[in-house]
Length: 377
Image 1 (spheres, rainbow, N blue to C red):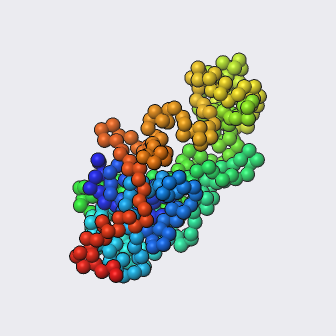
Image 2 (spheres, rainbow, N blue to C red):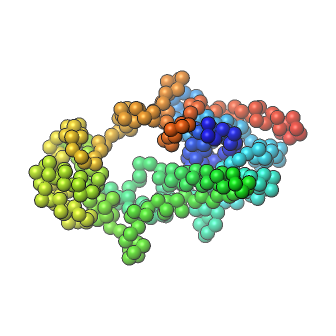
């Protein structure tokens, strides 16, 4: 596989770092998950279990190897340094400064292994006045301003259904690691990546920053094209208390739907977002309440219109299209897993659906180090 021979040391926990390293593992990298004695990664104990581990843990750590090391112990720390001598990538998600105090920061590892690509993921990054502040996804979404544009129908900020800051920062980290490995192929040297969840979130909103960058004002979410100000980018109730979503504002889609509904004259109101679209939205709300969700799906499928049925999560995982693309996998225990979304024609991912027990690979990985003089007693 394309990443065979790449060794990754993963000290991260919870979501961003493990999501990054999971992608590397799915495409052939050897990912060594270094866990603390006792409970290991906290997500081993969060949420429901459907087998040897929680769904949360196995969904982010399949195909990885696990070793247990106490980084406050000199011998264990030396073992990690020895492992890192043979590594290509090192990922950590401690607060800034912690790895340096533990003796496993980038400077220490680079002195031993100049080819290493070292990625630190934190809430606010390694520099700046907020670097030492702890935070998780929702706090970062708030600080970045994104939460001010994520409003419910009551106009108040609403908790998003997915951990956007976690996932976006993981993807930025993944891109950075792969770029650094590509550069290393010609330069022979690794690099250090400082990935801040806060930076990542701000970088993810170029489509809604127009009023702020151009006029230094807060966008009015209910008036903007993707946050509530467009009738054709909106959620509508159906007669069975379900929902249909319109998701394409190009005028060809607007004319197709309004023409089919017998109201083509309303189309011109949709040329730009804003409160002037309220007559269109009111018409569509009244119209969509007249049939069930599935009746609308059948009818809309005959038109050239961007729409979606608002599925529950069980419905989403049973979706014929999703399953046809191999995005729901089943392991030997009958447990379902998500497939790998990065798809290659010549060399597709081959996910290993087995997650590691805590410390399961200690002897395999640390035994040889003891043989050359690393004492872990």
